Image 1 (cartoon, one colour):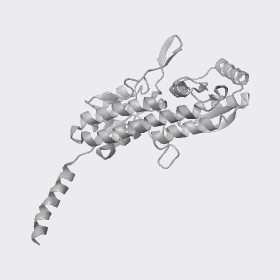
Image 2: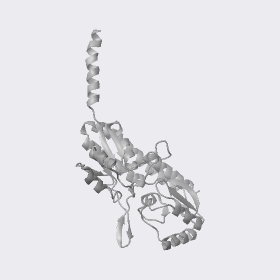
Image 3: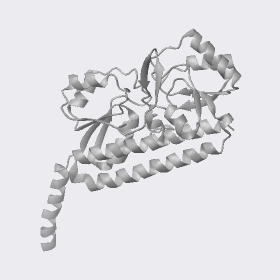
Image 4: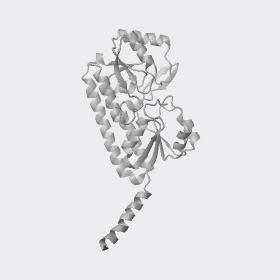
Length: 292
């Protein structure tokens, strides 16, 4: 009984400390970033994604509940590079006063000319090397927001960054084994530029960097001609976009379906791409398998 009397206050103290512990409330713009924050922050974070699974971050329209979520956030994370055109208005409406973390800070960007303007490609995370940069930036932001849990966050974050660098090496090896002439595919929109540059794959698409863009009849005709001339035989749909245009182009050019890709939205829990790592592996394997 004496030993129990000593142990009880210790037990109560532990429970008291646990009750006082507060997870960082992290809000991210879309699911790829939400998963990265979960992988990096581990048990120290509670993460909310504004755009849900299978959602399109380009055309997302925030609701009042999204403003409320931001108002309660300790950390807000975006990809940047023009991806979330709706975010500035939402931050202003929510009253969030903290710093918005731009996860793409430090990546080497790519761009294209469109209607006389230079537009930056926002889909940088589709290279796993860039994904590791995102994860490192997120780790630094979470440590700055929660210095007491820095050792735990640094450990889980460093392990995650290492896994992403290994994924990058694996993807390079996977595509190097395929003749370059076969590494051409058709997708719904231009979301795989960083992927293509990193792994030597050429992607063609009827629509540019944003799913909100529209392809003209002349653009579609030119693309069909190019697909036929280059004997590109495989097309892919994307989980977050309407597949009808790319299917019509494929039908006109003779391209066959290669499967579904996850360029900017994860699948729901239990799906084939419910984490960033799973989505990246799925995209690599689905694209590479079509090139046999």
